[in-house]
Length: 340
Image (cartoon, rainbow, N blue to C red; front, side):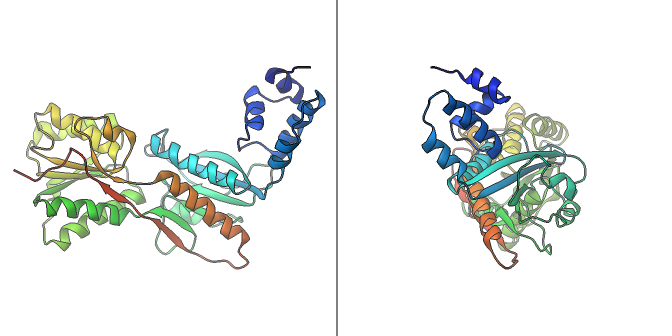
C-alpha cells in the first residue's frame, strides 16, 4: 500500500521536511526521530533496512554553533553557505550526525554554546567564531566538550583553531600590485572590526613595509562590510576627497564591490584609474564589471579541515592545542592593471 510523506509525517508527529531529510540521508535529525520514521515506513511493507542500517550506525554527533554578535559579517552569503556545506558533507562521510545551533547576542557565554537538553548526546562542538572578540573567546574556554574554533583565532589563547591564512593572502595580493608598478596603494577597511580583518590589514602593512613604501592614512578608508554600506560610505568619501591612490586592497569582495560602484559613479575608471583586489573569491566577483581580482579561499575545504580536526580531538587521549592555516591563492581578473 502506498504512503505519502505527509502521512508519514503525521504518524511520526514531525514535519514533512523532517521526513524528507531522513529519507534522503540528510544530517541534523536526532537518532530517535530517524528510528520513528523508519519504523513507520517499514510498517507499510517497504524495505528500508539497508538505508536504516547505514543511517543509524554512526560514530557520534557533532554540533556546529554559529555565533552572530552583530550579523554584519556572518550572513546568508555564498561564503558561509559553502563553508557549512563542507562541514555537513565531511561530518556525514565520517559517520557523524550534525546538529546546527544559532546563537545571537552581544556577549558569548559557555551556556549559550553548549547543547540544549533535547536528548542528543554531543561528542564535540564546532564554534563559528567569525564575529567573536577576545572576551567571547575566553568565555568559550569554559565549554566542557572537545572544541574547535572556526574562522578566527586569538594569540595567547590555548585552544584549537582552523583559520584562513589572512596575512599571507593580503601580502601576496599587495606584493603583486607593487610588482606591476603600483606605489600608492590604499586599503578599504571594514568599519566593523573582526580578527580576520585585523589580520588582513596586518598583511597589507607587512607588504608595504617589505618594499619600503609609506602607508598614507588618508587612503585607509573605513567602509561598512555590506554592499550598500560600502557604497554609501565610499560615495561620501569621494564627495569631499576625490583624490585616490592608484590601487586599493579591500578587506573582502563585498566591500570591494560596494566601493567599485561608488567609484564608477564618481567618474573613476577601473582599472585605468585605480586597480582593486578583494578577498574571498565570491561568485559576485565574476558578475560585476570589471571582474574583480581577489584572494581565493576554498570554503568547503575550510569546513572539511574543521570537522577532521574536531574528530581528531574527540579521539585524542591527550589534550593538545594547535592552529591550522588554510592556504589561499591570488586570482587575477580585469580589475587590476599597471598604473598609468
